[in-house]
Length: 289
Ligand code: NAD
Image (tube, rainbow, N blue to C red; front, side, top):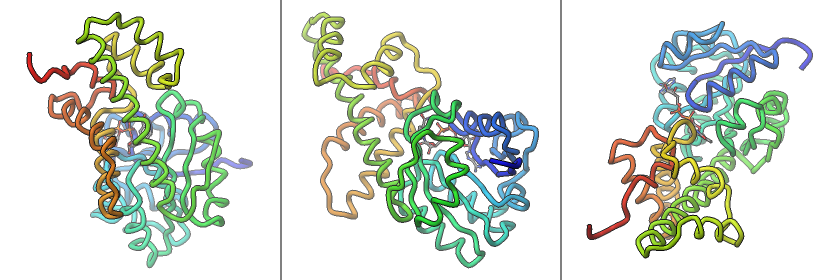
C-alpha cells in the first residue's frame, strides 16, 4: 500500500478489535465504531454511528455478531446506507450466512454501494497478526479490487464464488469445527463415565485419526477450566442454527450438525454463551445422576 488509506470498521469484539488494531499497526487509518462506546474510544478515529463511519470512507469492514445486527448496521436508522457514497465497498467479514448478504447487497445497490462477503477462518490468535484465512464471495472484479485490504488481514484469500459463497463455505467449515469439538467432548464423557484413564484417551486420540485442532487447542484449555477469549459458545450456536436453517431450505438432513447444536444450546441456556465454546466441557452428559 503506497499511501495511507482510510477505512471504516464496525464491530470491535473479540475478532474485530484485533483486526482493526492490526490494520492501524500497518498504517491504515481506521474509523472505528461499536455500540460499546468504550471499545470505539480505544481508536484514535472513531464514529458515533455506522452512518457517521460511512460518510467519508470508501471501504467499510463489518465484524458483527448476528445477521440481524448486520442488517441494522447497513440498512437501519443511522445505518451505512444513509450516508455512503456511490463506489463504497462494504466487506462483511462476520459469519452472517449467505441470505442476509445477498439481501443487503440488493438493498444497497440503488445507492451505488457494493457488498462482498469475506468471513474468516482461524480465530483471535490469527486476527491480531493479519494471518486469517479469508473466504471471499463476490465477482472476480470485486475480489480483485478488495484484495489490497484483505491481504492486510489474511495470509490466505480463497475466492469461493459469487456473493454469499464465502458464507456457505464458512458455515460448512463450522459444521466440522463445532461438531468435532462436540465429538471429542462425547468421547471424554463416555470414557470418564466408564472409569477410563482420561490422559490415555487424549493421548490415543492425538496418535490416531481422532487427532484435531480442537483436541490440541480448545480441549486442554477447557479441561483447565479456561473458557476465556476465543469463539463464544453463543456464536457456535448462531452458526449451527444458520446452517440448519439454510439446509432446511435445500431439503438437507444434517443429524451430526443437529446433535452438535444441542451441546452449544445447553451452554447458552446455562448462561455460558459469552464464554469460549470449550465451555461445553463443563456440562454433564448423564441422563441419570
Ligand atoms: P463478539 O461478540 O466478541 O463481538 C461482536 C461486537 O459487535 C461486540 O463488540 C459488540 O459490542 C458489537 N456490536 C453488537 N451490535 C452492534 C451494532 N449494532 N453496531 C456496532 N457494533 C455492534 O464476536 P467476535 O468473536 O468478534 O465475532 C464476530 C463475528 O466473527 C461473528 O459473526 C463470529 O461468528 C465471527 N467469527 C468469530 C471467530 C472467533 O474466533 N471469535 C472466528 C471466525 C469468525
